[in-house]
Length: 506
Image (cartoon, rainbow, N blue to C red; front, side, top):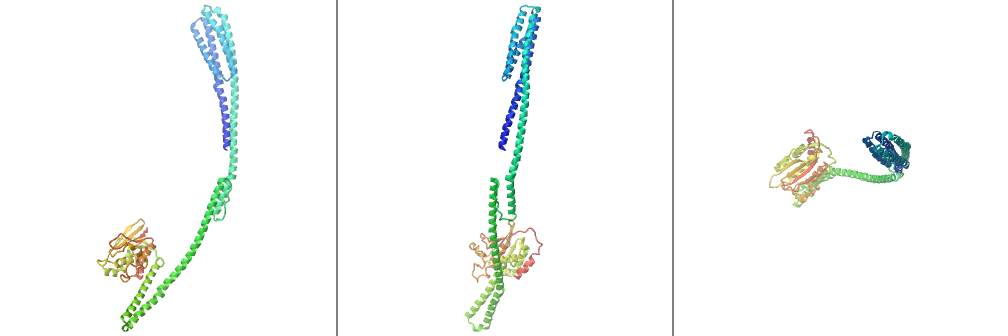
């Protein structure tokens, strides 16, 4: 297509240049030269008339047109020579015209003027005037020959211009026809060599997209399409490999899920055994030890009584540990009643459950207005009860406990802070306190098994929040936790009552 456009452009330029040359020769040389011949004849007639008039009247003023005609004649001849520089035959005719006119002027015009000035009368000059007129007619005849030649050249130029225009039009028609034919051939070639391979590539891609990932794409067609097909085939292979890995990982995940289900079933069985089968022997051990102490108290010495006390205390502590471990394991499994909960109601229930300990310690508890969150009412009540219970339990011996609960808006979360004025926690143990059964004090110093904060952390994380110790707080202990916000607010009183009953049951 590029070669055809270049060739057509070259031929078209030649045709246009030839047409322009013919047109320029006709319009810029032949036609102005023919007009110049007419002006030359007019100048000659003016000279003849001026000489004749002077010969008759002797008026010197009549010689001015004669002299002006001579000057104009010379300018016209010079202009005609420039126009006819490429026309030798026309220049020859112009030379003969110039010779005839010069001969008429020297042989007749100048002699008549000199004779009239010498005193000759018009009657005496009449024969000479007649001969001068005849000589001027001969010069005009030469002019007519030059005019006829220029008319012939003009006619031939018009014929050449018509032929050049016809050749130009034919050239452009041929170029357009060649372009049309080439476009048709190019369209057929594009259809055959490009579009069909693209259609086959598209069909293969749709087949792979439909689920036949094993279908291979074969490169074909032009180099660019073949490379595109190879790239798509590489992408298909990558997808197939990723799919196989995903299938393998899914099979492994399903196997792990099955093993996890079996492990959970074992855990459920263990929980059942721990809550029933293990606690019953412990109760029997504690009961029979106490019966043994009452019945044979007078026969036992102090060491025996101490041993029996150790056994009863160990059984009681074992029961307490089992109950706390069951509580920890049930978070997220047994307590899963997720709904909108009024934290104020859960907080009030926790405070009521701790009312005896709060009253004995003389503790003061203040709380900001609490929002509504999405969660399990029993677990949230358990959260408040553990945090408030720890604040009262680990009180400072020199002052009454004071607990403060504050709430802040934390960009999509509610941030809660529970601060007390108790004995505080060393920041070195900020992570250890949230580990199950980890204690910072001897077993007999404070009651409990060391599971409370671990339960709180698990409850908060189960609800999508975080729990941490504020290590910068020095007035006691300060725990900060977050809970996600909910867009709607539930009707007061509908979330707290079931939570209270469940918490009381726990």
